[in-house]
Image: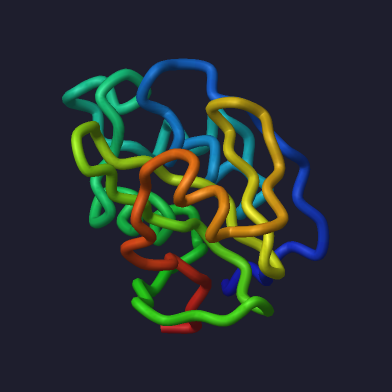
Length: 132
């Protein structure tokens, strides 16, 4: 069964150092943190060490919410933005209708370029809902 893109997203803050991708899946899918964690790889403590983009896509697929990786997107898209940092680990944030919610600091950004510049990130791709 295909799960639709949410009309509303309830902000969820990170609970652990590496669970940005996990909480973004909680927000995007409407599943609970426990449900998303149950679909995560059992090895490697993903809530502490984080998930790769591929792992995040695999977890989303297990939850009935397949994600495609897009290197271009527009302000109408909704998904998880995959960010690269020049000297630190990557980060996942929620992207919706041209805004960003950063679950690490519980902050909304209405200008994506300002967020990227302020935090020294580069937007690598958007993971968005697909029917595949």
